[in-house]
Length: 175
Image 1 (cartoon, helix red, strand yellow):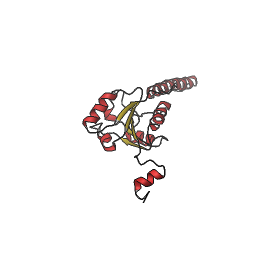
Image 2 (spheres, helix red, strand yellow; image 1 turned 45 degrees about the horizontal axis):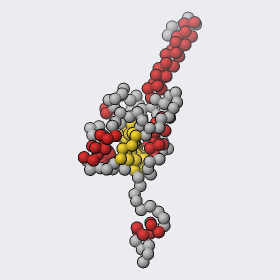
Image 3 (cartoon, helix red, strand yellow; image 1 turned 120 degrees about the vertical axis):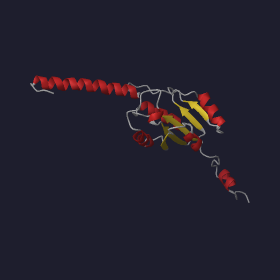
Image 4 (tube, rainbow, N blue to C red; image 1 turned 180 degrees about the horizontal axis):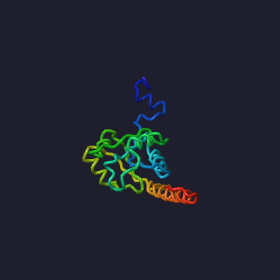
């Protein structure tokens, strides 16, 4: 009767019977840059399934509000190669989607403002034994920051406006 039940068949075929490891990453993901990609690639390495919770605009309080609308941010994140699924966070309780997803691991980026122990404590109170891991790897590049990208755009636009104004002035035209 060997291999007659499902568990024995999985075992005999050398397959894992344990469920997949679900990893959850969170963030604003305003203007996607190589730092975001590296973070998500590292997060994916920690499990089989990566779900990303994209912050709601009203919940972003630790930095300026995002430029890109939340529906667009979640759509872009969901299209990234390491991401299996992306969802918007809850507007009132940041733990609500986590309680629904029941991840094995939550990953935080090197610069995210959350405290790992406080998150784990809150999850324990709510009945989850999720591990919280901070990814310390950082992508090094000139524009691996949404803020740096925005500043660059502003500088380029100012420069171009000055070029256009000079161009039109030199031809006796008014802008």
